[in-house]
Amino acid sequence: MKVVITHNDFRLYYPPRLLALQEFLELRGDELHVVELFEESLDYSFSHDDKSVFHHHQYLFPSWRGVPIREIGRRLTATLERIDPDAVVCGAIAFPAGAVAVRWAARRGRPVVSMDNARRETFRRSWLNHFIKRRIFRHVDAFLCPAPAWNESLEWWG
Image (cartoon, rainbow, N blue to C red; front, side, top):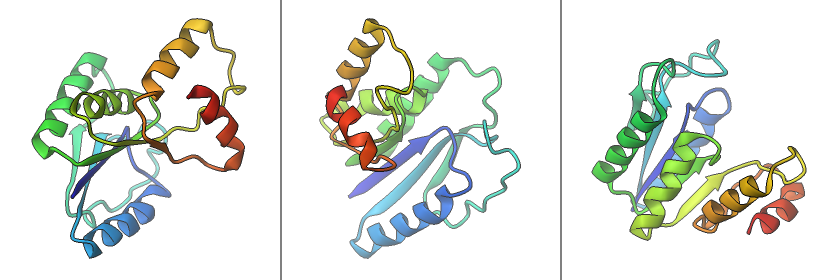
């Protein structure tokens, strides 16, 4: 089985966790593909994590500056098509990697796990935002969330 995990970038606390996931999957005969949108971190530019420990790792863009959303979608979709994973793990749907990954998985009938920390009460959202978010979340099979306090919100999102 091939699993893709994708997000804007994986820095700080992510590399050790992803390495543990890679080792776990390999013990089962499975493989992990780590796909980061940007080599240059949006938030953690001070962090210089060694990504050579990942057997299947790639950046889609050197920097986030000036990259059109449409190009992110096109390139991530092409990457998912090439890898053809059996399951996808993605960041929050508020970011292009999350939304594109959910769309790709839904269109191909593949399971998707979202690492979304959206709590209903964190931000005031319009009815349209709630409507769109619920429509996207209906294609998510599972969530990795920070703590049980998120359960109520995730159940409300559907």
